[in-house]
Image 1 (cartoon, rainbow, N blue to C red):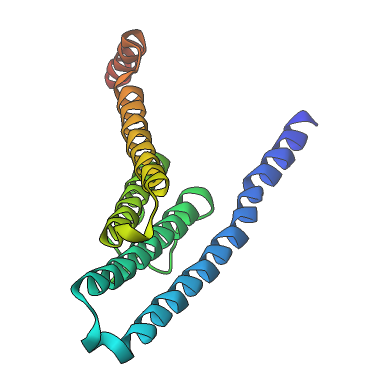
Image 2 (cartoon, rainbow, N blue to C red; image 1 turned 180 degrees about the vertical axis):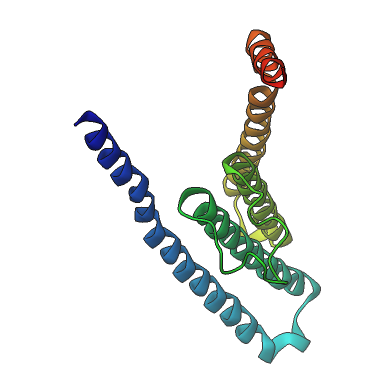
Length: 186
């Protein structure tokens, strides 16, 4: 009885991972929204493209890069999140255009790539602010820099925690694994 109950419970828990699928579909909708925003940004500037000042052109380009980075980030979260938490993507397993990182990014790598993208996006926003510095108060600029530095420190701390976790395995535990491996070899 216990075994049947336990198996049923574990089956329900295992199947619950599919509750994440709608989240990834929602992120696909967010990706479409970013694409619409990207296209709007291009369409708004095209009529005046020859009249753009250098600073305006740089801000426009940085905005496009910013949107592109956000879209890349979304795509990475969608793919790796789905593969890590829901199911492997069999559709793309042998596809010639399959990104090389697919199936190789674990949760830890995804966290680091996420924070790196956030830092890059924050840096672009900061650069855009400095390109039109007269539009910002000193207080706003200080907050932008402080937030950017917070993202950087967070990224460094996340990387440090992952590094410590990766190398922080207790030596006795390593010896136990090595002894078990050696015992299996005999």
